[in-house]
Amino acid sequence: MKNFFKQLFDDNNSINKKSVVGFIAFMMMVIALAVDLVTGYLGKELLINEFIFDGFMVIVLGSFGIGSVDKFINARKDSKTEETKNEELG
Image 1 (cartoon, helix red, strand yellow):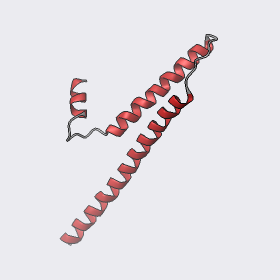
Image 2 (image 1 turned 30 degrees about the vertical axis):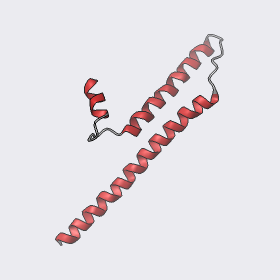
Image 3 (image 1 turned 180 degrees about the horizontal axis):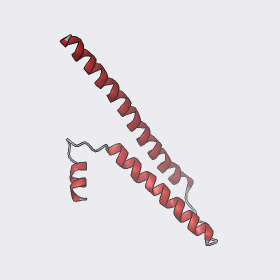
Image 4 (image 1 turned 90 degrees about the vertical axis):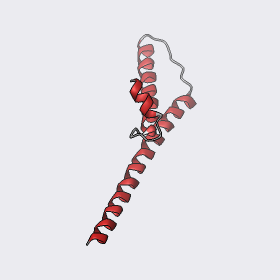
């Protein structure tokens, strides 16, 4: 775990920070859902401010959406780079 945090804050790492933030926000949403279900079963209402839940939802959607777009763009760049290398060789 210590190595993970050391690698996370290193400038040259392979960890996608957007995915880490998105996963943490997603886990917070899951915890809020579980607590809401338990308190609802016990007959008490859990008051979660809507803007807090919406904020976590936007973070999750944004971070995973941006991560997907990054992968798509990087895949296209890699394929173009390989095409130019093949053209130079051939």
